[in-house]
Image (cartoon, rainbow over all chains, first blue to last red; front, side, top):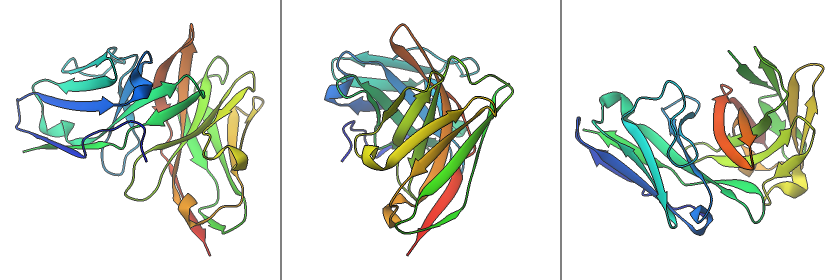
Length: 108
Length: 121
């Protein structure tokens, strides 16, 4: 079972805002990261340390983390954003990375 | 720019040891954490473990008894060994780079292309 819970799927219309949540005790006091994975491709880091965007990631991607829930927000969603999204958090008690189960974002 | 290339046998027999290597090109293996992650067919990501360039390691508790990650700085490579494999270990295996500073991770910013390993009975 996943210790980080994500909704299996989220749908959004082009140009609208998509929000994907990730919840779990391991998020309390620990940073979250988010990855985008398109079919047949390797994951790509889109958010690290809750809110930071790596170089080359569009500004429409943003993140937040409060309490035990982290949220990835995609503003002005585009067709190219359709992908699986995974959250990740560090379990500081046992010192290992945990991934959420993934959320399939559909842009219809 | 840094690139990672995972390689190894695509087919491993059940009960044997899976061995993969990740070659780092375009950059040094120093100062980073080097991760292995896997993804069973149609499923999500599972972190296997990482090694720091100082050769300290951390492993997923669920796999710890079967996993060894090692580093060869002379070849700019790091490796994964997973023993006593079963069909449940069939997956795409990825290697990835990660930076840590001041006790906080910066996420896995460079990933290899992934290599598929099938465990046969």
